[in-house]
Image 1 (cartoon, rainbow, N blue to C red):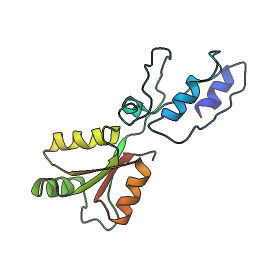
Image 2: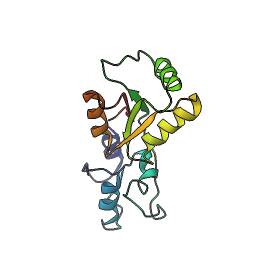
Image 3: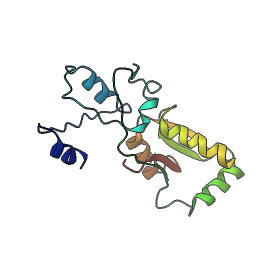
Image 4: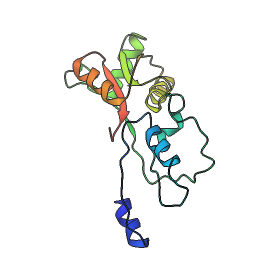
Amino acid sequence: MIMAEMDKHLPVSLNVINQTGGVVGSNGMVYVANQPDDGYTLVGLPDSNLTAAVQGGWDKKFDFWYPFVVGGSPDLISVPASSPYESLTDLIEAAKGAPGSIPAAAGGAGSIHHLNLLALETGSGAQFKFVPYKGSAPGQEAAIAGEVALVVTSLAE
Protein backbone atom coordinates (compact mmCIF):
# COMPACT_ATOMS: atom_id res chain seq x y z
CA MET A 1 0.00 0.00 0.00
CA ILE A 2 2.76 2.42 0.91
CA MET A 3 4.67 1.76 -2.31
CA ALA A 4 1.51 2.23 -4.39
CA GLU A 5 0.99 5.66 -2.82
CA MET A 6 4.66 6.60 -3.25
CA ASP A 7 4.51 5.50 -6.88
CA LYS A 8 1.85 8.17 -7.53
CA HIS A 9 4.22 10.94 -6.45
CA LEU A 10 7.61 9.79 -7.74
CA PRO A 11 8.91 10.07 -11.29
CA VAL A 12 9.99 6.41 -11.29
CA SER A 13 8.26 3.09 -10.71
CA LEU A 14 8.97 1.25 -7.49
CA ASN A 15 10.05 -2.36 -7.25
CA VAL A 16 9.53 -4.03 -3.87
CA ILE A 17 11.95 -6.75 -2.81
CA ASN A 18 11.29 -8.65 0.38
CA GLN A 19 14.72 -9.57 1.69
CA THR A 20 13.71 -12.40 4.00
CA GLY A 21 15.76 -14.37 6.44
CA GLY A 22 15.63 -12.08 9.36
CA VAL A 23 17.74 -11.50 12.41
CA VAL A 24 15.36 -8.63 13.12
CA GLY A 25 15.75 -7.10 9.67
CA SER A 26 19.54 -7.47 9.53
CA ASN A 27 19.56 -9.24 6.17
CA GLY A 28 17.56 -6.43 4.60
CA MET A 29 19.72 -3.75 6.23
CA VAL A 30 22.92 -5.38 4.95
CA TYR A 31 21.42 -5.63 1.45
CA VAL A 32 20.45 -1.94 1.39
CA ALA A 33 23.75 -0.81 2.91
CA ASN A 34 25.57 -2.54 0.04
CA GLN A 35 23.54 -0.78 -2.68
CA PRO A 36 24.82 2.34 -4.47
CA ASP A 37 24.26 5.57 -2.56
CA ASP A 38 22.02 6.98 -5.28
CA GLY A 39 18.67 7.37 -3.53
CA TYR A 40 17.05 4.52 -5.45
CA THR A 41 17.02 2.00 -2.62
CA LEU A 42 14.87 2.35 0.48
CA VAL A 43 14.56 0.03 3.43
CA GLY A 44 11.49 -0.64 5.52
CA LEU A 45 12.41 -2.01 8.93
CA PRO A 46 10.53 -3.32 11.93
CA ASP A 47 10.64 -1.31 15.11
CA SER A 48 12.39 -4.28 16.69
CA ASN A 49 15.57 -3.61 14.67
CA LEU A 50 16.88 -1.85 17.77
CA THR A 51 17.64 -5.30 19.16
CA ALA A 52 19.35 -6.62 16.01
CA ALA A 53 22.90 -6.35 17.36
CA VAL A 54 21.93 -8.28 20.49
CA GLN A 55 20.52 -10.98 18.23
CA GLY A 56 23.82 -11.31 16.36
CA GLY A 57 22.75 -9.30 13.33
CA TRP A 58 23.17 -5.66 12.28
CA ASP A 59 25.88 -4.07 14.40
CA LYS A 60 26.39 -0.76 12.63
CA LYS A 61 25.17 2.74 13.44
CA PHE A 62 22.17 4.23 11.69
CA ASP A 63 24.00 7.52 11.16
CA PHE A 64 23.97 7.27 7.36
CA TRP A 65 20.22 6.58 7.02
CA TYR A 66 17.21 8.68 7.78
CA PRO A 67 14.83 6.12 9.28
CA PHE A 68 11.11 6.62 9.26
CA VAL A 69 8.29 4.62 10.77
CA VAL A 70 5.20 4.03 8.68
CA GLY A 71 3.50 1.39 10.78
CA GLY A 72 3.99 -1.12 13.47
CA SER A 73 2.86 -4.49 14.68
CA PRO A 74 2.07 -4.89 18.36
CA ASP A 75 3.30 -7.88 20.28
CA LEU A 76 0.82 -10.36 21.60
CA ILE A 77 0.79 -13.40 23.84
CA SER A 78 -0.59 -16.57 22.31
CA VAL A 79 -1.45 -19.84 23.99
CA PRO A 80 -2.43 -23.12 22.32
CA ALA A 81 -6.13 -23.86 21.90
CA SER A 82 -5.79 -26.57 24.54
CA SER A 83 -4.36 -24.14 27.11
CA PRO A 84 -5.94 -23.98 30.57
CA TYR A 85 -5.51 -20.19 30.49
CA GLU A 86 -8.70 -18.44 29.34
CA SER A 87 -7.37 -14.91 29.83
CA LEU A 88 -4.21 -12.94 30.45
CA THR A 89 -5.33 -12.58 34.06
CA ASP A 90 -5.49 -16.39 34.40
CA LEU A 91 -2.00 -16.71 32.95
CA ILE A 92 -0.50 -14.03 35.20
CA GLU A 93 -2.13 -15.45 38.32
CA ALA A 94 -0.78 -18.93 37.49
CA ALA A 95 2.73 -17.50 36.95
CA LYS A 96 2.54 -15.65 40.25
CA GLY A 97 1.40 -18.82 42.00
CA ALA A 98 4.27 -20.90 40.65
CA PRO A 99 7.10 -18.48 39.75
CA GLY A 100 9.37 -19.65 36.95
CA SER A 101 7.39 -22.79 36.19
CA ILE A 102 5.41 -21.70 33.11
CA PRO A 103 7.58 -21.94 29.97
CA ALA A 104 7.29 -18.91 27.69
CA ALA A 105 8.75 -18.84 24.17
CA ALA A 106 10.09 -15.76 22.42
CA GLY A 107 12.83 -14.93 19.95
CA GLY A 108 16.35 -15.13 21.41
CA ALA A 109 17.49 -13.36 24.54
CA GLY A 110 17.39 -9.61 24.06
CA SER A 111 14.83 -9.71 21.22
CA ILE A 112 11.94 -7.25 21.30
CA HIS A 113 9.63 -10.15 22.15
CA HIS A 114 11.85 -11.17 25.08
CA LEU A 115 11.94 -7.57 26.29
CA ASN A 116 8.15 -7.44 26.15
CA LEU A 117 7.95 -10.66 28.18
CA LEU A 118 10.24 -9.04 30.76
CA ALA A 119 8.02 -5.93 30.74
CA LEU A 120 4.98 -8.12 31.41
CA GLU A 121 6.80 -9.74 34.32
CA THR A 122 7.88 -6.38 35.74
CA GLY A 123 4.45 -4.84 35.38
CA SER A 124 2.48 -7.79 36.72
CA GLY A 125 4.83 -9.32 39.28
CA ALA A 126 4.62 -12.67 37.48
CA GLN A 127 7.68 -14.74 36.64
CA PHE A 128 7.81 -17.04 33.60
CA LYS A 129 10.45 -19.56 32.53
CA PHE A 130 11.91 -17.90 29.40
CA VAL A 131 12.70 -20.35 26.61
CA PRO A 132 14.60 -18.65 23.74
CA TYR A 133 14.00 -19.76 20.16
CA LYS A 134 15.71 -18.77 16.92
CA GLY A 135 12.84 -16.58 15.81
CA SER A 136 9.10 -16.33 16.17
CA ALA A 137 8.14 -19.23 13.91
CA PRO A 138 10.01 -21.86 15.98
CA GLY A 139 8.47 -20.39 19.15
CA GLN A 140 5.00 -20.62 17.66
CA GLU A 141 5.63 -24.20 16.61
CA ALA A 142 6.79 -24.99 20.16
CA ALA A 143 3.55 -23.58 21.59
CA ILE A 144 1.43 -25.60 19.17
CA ALA A 145 3.42 -28.73 20.01
CA GLY A 146 2.96 -28.14 23.75
CA GLU A 147 6.66 -27.57 24.46
CA VAL A 148 5.85 -24.17 25.97
CA ALA A 149 2.68 -22.72 27.50
CA LEU A 150 2.79 -19.44 25.58
CA VAL A 151 4.65 -17.53 22.92
CA VAL A 152 5.31 -13.81 22.58
CA THR A 153 5.36 -12.64 18.95
CA SER A 154 4.12 -9.72 16.91
CA LEU A 155 0.67 -9.67 15.38
CA ALA A 156 2.23 -9.66 11.92
CA GLU A 157 4.04 -12.91 12.62
